[in-house]
Length: 262
Image 1: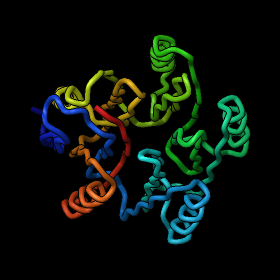
Image 2 (image 1 turned 60 degrees about the vertical axis):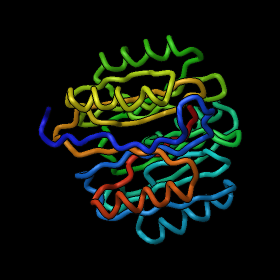
Image 3 (image 1 turned 30 degrees about the horizontal axis):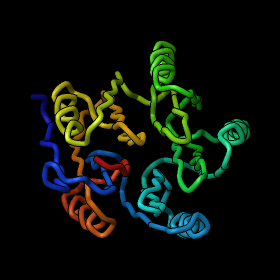
Image 4 (image 1 turned 45 degrees about the vertical axis):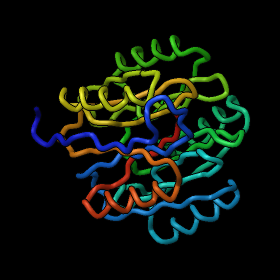
C-alpha cells in the first residue's frame, strides 16, 4: 500500500434489496492548498446567483456546482489562486458551447460544468493552473470514451464530466499537473467503493465522480504529490451538511460534489 492512503469512507443508505432514494456524494481531500471553505444551497437559479455574489464578496472562489434533489449546491474555497471568475448558463448545449468560446476569447477557462433544471451551467476562471482548455461533447458514450483517449494522446487531461440531455460532455485541459489519468464506469453504487479502493492502491486519486443517470463515472489521476482522500454519501441535505462539518474538523476539504441513486 502506498504511503498516505486511507480507507474509503462511505455511509450505507439502505439494506440490500430496498430501492434507494437519491443521495448526495462528497469527495474530501487534504493538501489541496485551500485555506478556508464554504458552501451554499439554493432552490432557484436566481437565488443561487445572489449567494454566489455574496460569497465572492467575502473573498471565496467558486470551485464546484451541483444540482440534485431539486437543489443547487455551490462549493467555495479560499487559496485557489484564481484572479477572476465568471459563470453563465444556457438551455441549449450548442448555445452553451458558443458562450464557452466567447468567454475563452476573454481569457477565461471553463473549469466546471453542471446540468440542472433544464440549464447548462458553466463556471470560468482566470489565474487557474491550466495552459489551455477544450470543451467537447458527444452523443454516445463510446464516442466520448474515444475522445478521452484522443485528448490524452495530445497531452490533455479530463478534469470534469457531465452527462445529460442525451450528451456526454467533458472539459479537457493542459497544465493540470497530473502524471496520469484513468477512469472507471460502474452500474451500481455498491461497486463504487471497491473501484476507488483499487485505484487508491495503484496511486491514483479521485478527480470527479459523476452519475450519468444510469451509471457512475469515476475519474482518477496521479497527482505529483500523494494526498489523503475520503468519500461519503448522505441521503438528505441535512445529513450531508453534518458529513461536511465532520470532515472539516478532521482537516479535509470538500473538493467534489455529486448526486445519484443506486
